Length: 114
Length: 112
Image (tube, rainbow over all chains, first blue to last red; front, top):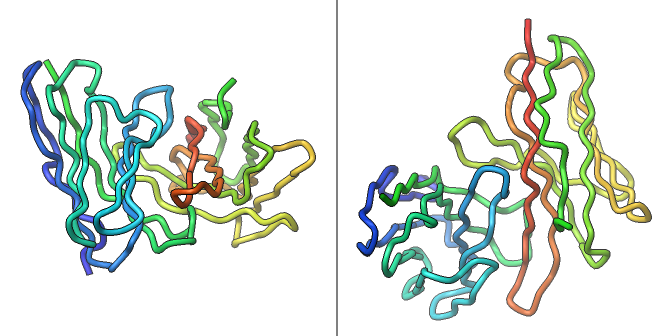
């Protein structure tokens, strides 16, 4: 049982490049979300999904797109990378209604935009 | 004002000490409360939920004071392995499901 798998673990992008951060879970969780973590800021919600075909914006959605075509996968796309998007990105999943206790996080993607 | 506030620390304590962290939240509609632990360069992991009556899990005790809108975590008999950042997490129900708000974390360093 792999849990939540994020790829890549590390990435360096040039300003203006696009890329997709992958997130997959094998726990049949309906709820998936993307967070970014910056020093002194805590984890901030970027986008989330309550099920396949349904996505919504979180606190800091600008510059990011998501889609949820299957229950298992929830990719995060950076449309045109900017240095302000240098951060650590975490994907998390849970069963509906479990709130914080059911959240499983992936190991993170460390992104640097130069 | 941040929705969830924590003292960033670091708290440097000797092994065996008792240490307490506090966290305050601003949204009175918050429904559930949690402490997560995050090791350096790792993902957050649930440490314990926080219930109104207070709850204990081994050396860890969590308390919730809804009237004052603060949450506490007490760690007794600190171990070197307790060194980590402790995140206070608050949940509100929204139309789209659960909204979790994370504090910035309190860093604990347990020393010999």
